[in-house]
Every structure is written in C-alpha cells, then in structure tokens.
Amino acid sequence: MKIRKTQISKTDLINQYLPANYTECLQCNFSSIQKITADHIMVAFWTAPPKWVDSLFKLRDILVKPFGIQGGNKGNKQELEKSIRTGGTFKFMSIAAKSDEETILCANDKHLVMYLSIKIEELNESDKQVTVSTLVKFHNLLGRAYFFIIYPFHCIIVKTMLKSVLKKLKQ
Image 1: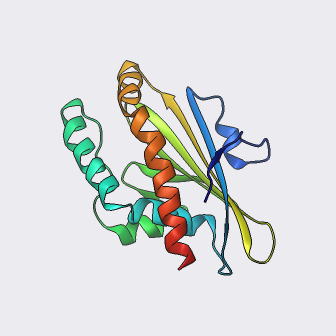
Image 2: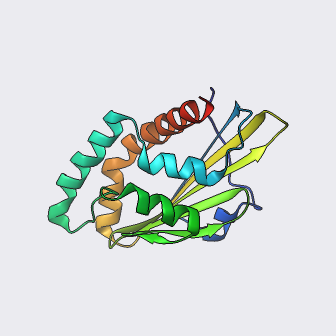
C-alpha cells in the first residue's frame, strides 16, 4: 500500500478550516469489497492504534501534563466511537463536520487546535481511495513549541495508523 502526499481539494470539507500553520494531506488506494466509511476509519484511528503508537500517546500524556495540556483519548472507547458516528463530543475532541464521504475531528486545547479529516471515495466496486488531512493552528507559543517536538513523530504515526487501520478493515 503506497501512501502519497497530495493537496487538499477545494471541494473537501476540511478546506473550510484553512488557512493553518501546518497542513498535511496523505492519500492511498486500497481494495475491499466491504462498505467502508470515513467514520469506520476515524473510529479505528482513535480506538485501535498499534501498540507502540498507543505507548507513545501514553508517554506524551505524562510529559505534557505539567504544561496543562489535556491527555489523549484514554477512557471509554464506546463513548468516543459514538461521538464520532453521531457528530458529538468526547473530552476535548468533537466532530467539526461530516458528509457522506468525509468526517472531520477537531481536537481543541489551550495550545493549539488540530483538525483531522478522513475522506473515502469509491473508485469502483472494490477499489477505494482514502485521504487523511491534518490541519494545525497554533493558539500560542506553547502550541508552536509542542508541535515542533511532536512533528517528526506525527508524520510517522499518521502513515503507520493509516496502514494499520486499512489492513484491519480489509480482513
């Protein structure tokens, strides 16, 4: 599965949250005869990360606590899934926008706001294209410093999580 960088399309829902301090848009094609929605992928992103990614998130939560930055999504995974599917809120994360093809999660904290968009398009009966877009807007210097530190991990984690999620959904 080859993941490639691309640009956010003007027709994507996530486009309405531009401009941003940081923008990343990744895309890949995959095959599956199952009906897979953006919600399926978004739920899996946040509730079933690879173990090493989950460990990094736990370490992150410990390191940022003294700065008053909120912890990750630990807690009730069913509540998180429900909020994604119904357009609700879970802790500091909420669903900012939804369409039949795209779901946008917003994580807003005192240091920055992050938008994560999952868009899925059916190319034919079995081939699909998924686009994962990340936008980050800094609220202050703490946001800039935080993102400077996590940026190298972010790039690796998003690609790893996307591959992991698609592998699980194809089974």
